[in-house]
Amino acid sequence: MKLSHIKNILPALENVEFQLEDGRFVPEHFHVTEIGMVTKNFIDCGGTIRKEERVNFQLWNADDYDHRLKPGKLLHIINLSEKQLGIGDFEIEVEYQDQTIGKYDLEFNGKNFILKNKLTACLASDACGVEPIKKNTAPDTCCAPESGCC
Image 1 (cartoon, rainbow, N blue to C red):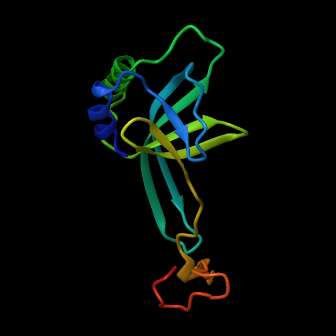
Image 2 (cartoon, rainbow, N blue to C red):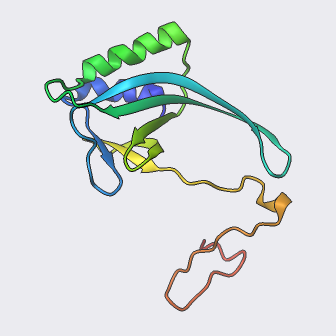
């Protein structure tokens, strides 16, 4: 989800709720402690130089049970971060500490913001000789290369 998308959603909401993919909710007394722009410059294992830019939201489970982050307040924080930091309309990545600090993509299901688990991947599998993991479509079958089922 891009920053512009969340800005369009927030005015229609009564509450801001984040839900993990397993159905659990981030406690309703969370705070957004940071909004920032993260730029990652790196080289993959195949030698390709890459650059990723994301807007980062950090959620923190505070012991402040008397306050709730309302949509208008989050929109204000986003607008302030855009103005003060020059943040562009990039994909949002959310940091949230569950068992450890996790990074999540963000989606919206019509009511709640969903923290989608991110996965690592080899970006240069053709250069380093690593075969992509193939998923089975049935218990006793295996995907053949070029089958399109994986």
